[in-house]
Amino acid sequence: MIRAVVAHLSRAWSRFLHAEGGGAAPLLALAVIPMVGAIGLSVDAMRGYTLKSQLVHALDAAALAGGKDLDPDTVDQTVNAFFEANLPADFMRAAIDGPTITIDSAQETIRVAASAEIPTTFMQVLGQDRLRVGAETVVQRSVRGMELALVMDNTGSMRGGGKIDAMKAAAQELVDILYGDRQTVDNLWISVVPYAVAVNVGDVNSAWLDGYDPSLYAGTSWKGCVEARAAPGDQTDDPPSVAGWSPYFYPTDVDNVWPPINDANSAQNNGAGPNLGCASPITPLTDWRQDVEDAIAAMEPWHRGGTMGNLGLVWGWRTISPKWRSLWGLNTPADMPFDYDKPLMDKVVVMLTDGVNQFYDHEGGGPDGSDYGGYGRVGWARLGTANRADAEDEVDARMAAACAAMKAEGIIIFTITFQLTHGPTRDLYRTCASSADHYYDSPSNDELSVVFQEIGSELSNLRIAQ
Figure: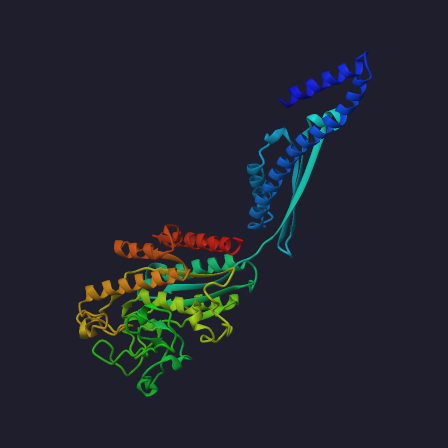
């Protein structure tokens, strides 16, 4: 259509120039020149505007994608793929020059520039046969902050088959991904929460306890584990000002004869003492890589009592809950954890288990139907029943309630079942996760390494999502 109009005007222009009669023809011919120029300018300007808009859109998409990468080995491929997807080679028959990519690693910026050229239509009459446009986009990567709780199963079943070592190695791989070659990363904070039948909050936090009598621990001292609070306090992030905890105290009895006390990890099921089954303490939020690595290395499988994953989960929550601001001490700053809705700050929990939530009975008919743990013995009916199966179902229900409450606060939950074939427990952890994509099942030690690498990559992408 445009070519036809140009041809028609050209023929008219020729007729006017060769007209022999009257003086109006040359004057009209002269008037046509600016008219054609104006039409050409508007039509070709619109084409140029369309090309420039698409070029800018393609550069924006490419720069944003490249900003999430900034890996010298892959960034060019990423930028070019997104640029070409948004500005195809045949778009308006344009000749495209670029994109060129400039990375400033110190400032974490990426500059992407390109130009494009198209033939004109009307403006050819005025001697302008090509139209060139150019643009550039500069993206500074805005790194999101993260408070990450690693909630790790430290029960006795992790001793077999090299599972505890596989978990520690895999967790270290996640740390390597997040930190790279640095000791600290801006706005990255990690807590480590080992759990078994109870959770160790640290022996420096005796102020959180109700009814604590140090003299009961004659020959040793309170290691730091606590019992569960009564419902619903065992499913919330309420701090000690709302309700305290009873100190963990495994009584001397037929299944735990002491003194003498032997609470070394190597004693396994043959240990004895008031801290029997109490795992390593929580490492609260720290930005120092070495703290995290030391906490991972210190994890060991602790026997007796059973598994109470719900307590590990809820204590992981408490390490990143703003209700606990200024309470944790150590390397956690007094203004942390941050608010749930703090801009560009995510709260994440990664939780692993290799077993079902259960009351273990080492003696097979011991007092009150089970070993002692975070809910006492099953026969004490602290879960509303003295029936073991019903009590374990209640633990699962309370864990599900805690998961829902955490997700309602915007916490992102990754869950991992490790060498676990129990269908209902896998369903529990799948439902607990933020989505189906946040749940992983690892049937082997080798696959666990892959799982943690995938989660580490996902967390890295999450941190550079804006």
